[in-house]
Image (cartoon, rainbow, N blue to C red; front, side):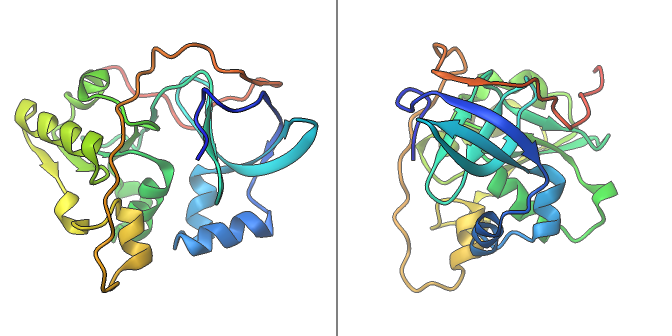
Length: 222
């Protein structure tokens, strides 16, 4: 995977609903229904080193994007989390879009009963988003089973009331999405470690060529 500090400049040419067979195949491999993916993801065409590529694009709440496919994953600044509001008193927290989509696909109720979603889009410390999470009545954590996810989850549970850590659901697997993709596998996968990232990052050599608005509603004043 590529990080924001070691990729060549990227220019987003356009975004539109997902229609690439390659990206649809990748979503199928990750066990994400296409109709669910289209609710939260776009397809982005971007230029890098005189070549044009396409990737799944997940908007954040500050105007940036997470671009990813089977082989790449990098930030398009400005970087930040994504807050998706369903006007709920509860919130579910995820590291990335694939884990959000896994939860949404497994959720038994209608979309109108979804909790609000907070997607961190990076391995960030709990303090970076504590003020977003704290006002909700119930907080549900679905973070990875890595060093950053464990640290975030433990601190959130110790600090906030009605905060529930659901990592035991996919114990032995790196993420909830990996659990769904490999459920029933005989061998317990190795859980990777990951560094905690900061949103106070230097400007990466990435820029969008057009103004792209976040499609999600802004959070209500609390």
